[in-house]
Length: 119
Image (cartoon, rainbow, N blue to C red; front, top):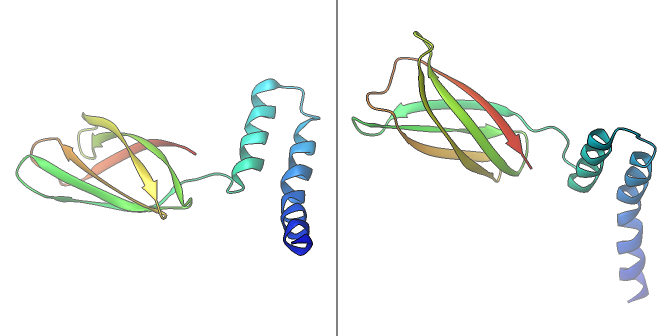
């Protein structure tokens, strides 16, 4: 039992040390972001790879991989040729992957995705 307790305490030390480093940041937003990164332990998350395909005449499927195991992906889609806004929405990253069905009419030949990820 003592061994398990010691392992739990020692495993928590890096997060405690990181949180103490955040205490010295005077800007509130930066300090809170620092605490979030220390608690999360995963750092910045980005889309690594993504693709799209037509699922039906009016639906497009977007799927891909991210650098984080989980998070909320908020996106805006634009036609890659005309830069016309097509859709906005959100989906969840689970196990480093995401998938979303979007109703945008006929699938364009190219898409641009602008996104943010919150963890």
